[in-house]
Image (cartoon, rainbow, N blue to C red; front, side):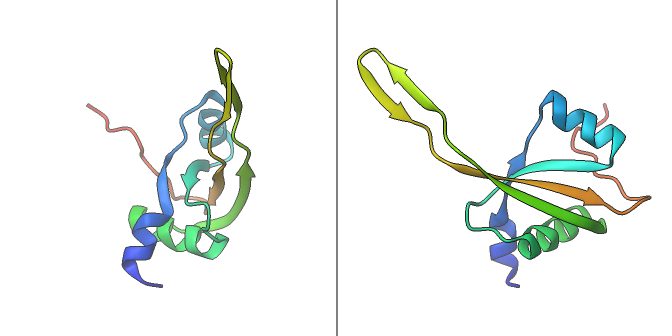
Length: 98
């Protein structure tokens, strides 16, 4: 795969209570990814950027929430989320230790 495409796959990490518990308990990390990303592209991007071995990748499409401002109704954009399980012995350090 082309390197410039792999750099655009991962939009950013998702930091939530559930994602933190998964990272601690099951060695899984959650990323917001491009809406047209495939499992193989997510695997390759994580392995290249973080220098780790990926065991499995699960992706899901998240529907945008309906929002209302006064009398105007709208909707946020749909997005895609990826759950990345790492091989034992590998870890991703997202927050720098100071």
